[in-house]
Image (cartoon, rainbow, N blue to C red):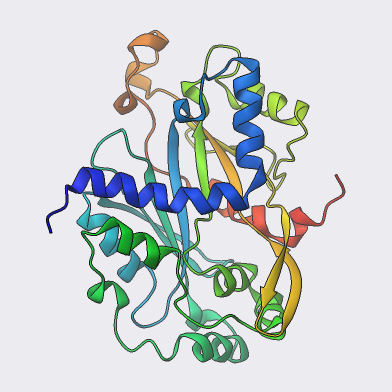
Length: 302
């Protein structure tokens, strides 16, 4: 059976977004508020700047495995990022056309963790002795969707989750959620005047009871000043583990404002196209955005 690559990619992205939307109540809350205010007519009007995945850097998994799916469907691998304190590697991927979001894939450098936490991760992933993507029907969007939303290893115990969280909240998030979508991102600069900057859009969000990540300030700004990012704080959800239940951080929503590059800053808004704006990511911004699922943010009083 033959598959159209463009349609397949749309179906794959849709298969990721459906469970994410159901499990992250802020997605509907924000889009409904935007519709009520007249910023958009329908949630489909929202431009998705990028989506993000978290992975484990172990044999046969991690970035080298997951990226195969998206590169096959037309994405191009771009810049590398390193997060020393969080023990992470990352790359971003540009889409085959502007109708699709960028992709950001990060990976825990497992070998930098203490031996105890390395052994916990190995307990769950050690049985994976070949790259599962190599066996995947990569042109079949239904199969790819099932894989990305499926279980690569057994549910962890509460104790293992908490042991990992002591040294890496990123590790504990991934050991429970696997490839579940970490966040999607609203392109704020595409919104109507009065709401197309993060300053004004954040005010709109907070007026609707949306809580924002304050790590590094509510607005994280790149060194060149052309990429600004904010994010919600992940909601605490009840999770079922192998031996019980515990409340943990879920996923969140991000917001990005990409300003025009210097050569295009005099253009009026209607003339500015996506290629005129600042592309890529900024490690210092991403470092703070990761913390949207961390206890320092999720445990703060509202």
